[in-house]
Image 1 (cartoon, rainbow, N blue to C red):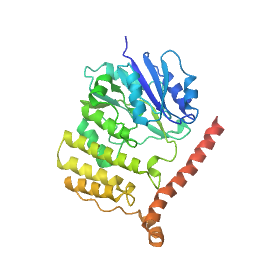
Image 2: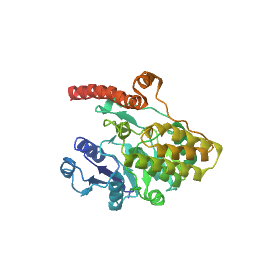
Image 3: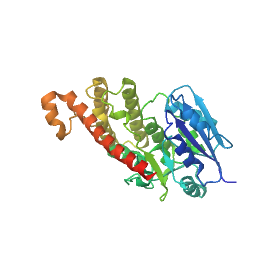
Image 4: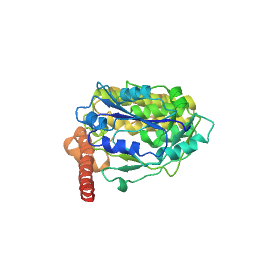
Length: 333
């Protein structure tokens, strides 16, 4: 009998997308699958839409709002699969996504192999998804993967992965302290526990750009920033645990520098902590500067207004692009 794959979907205020995502999960050609949706106390109609799909092999549950990590842990506890396919409530998979990865997994004796795939970004029109291959789209050791991620600020979305039950148990549950970048921390831990990462080409997975991201907020909350800082520290420690070298320490410094602007100037304590960790790693972090195109705003109105403009204006441009994509999507339908 083929292994059972659990497709686990945490959902919060995803009424607009959840039906399409569930159809994507149901369309998977792999013969043995279960689908579990955990509604994380949504305030819209997410639960009602999801419940329309309830039936054999499809479990829909709800919980008091506790965050994405808690919803994922709840889904994991309910699951019985030999492999886990995480799926965000607004993302989509081509029908053969799981089957292609499972075909490779069934031929491997090592259950600690972690399977990845490429992906494409889209807003409304999935056929217009755009892919940007990078160094992570390859067979890699855990040390190589984490080094590339940190030094080049790369990532793979949650739904790109296929994780064996054995590997997931070795990595442990999602960290419910994290409200931001919980997925980055979790999969770095899974990667650390893996024997190797095998990239499966030809798989189609689609990552929806749902709108203004959490970190584009000009005034991010203390909770989010503290979560990001904890996640960063943990990810750097995972890489150093695999290899303590000049390159891995330098990767940690670069990773800290890439995200420093999100703390400045609102959380100078986190800036100081990041600079201290960088010094421990043998590097140095300068205070972040605004990009050259915003220096006029800085001279006229000050640094904080320039930071606001640097966050706000690209979002305005993105909103225009989204509106155009939505219009083409509606016309196409």
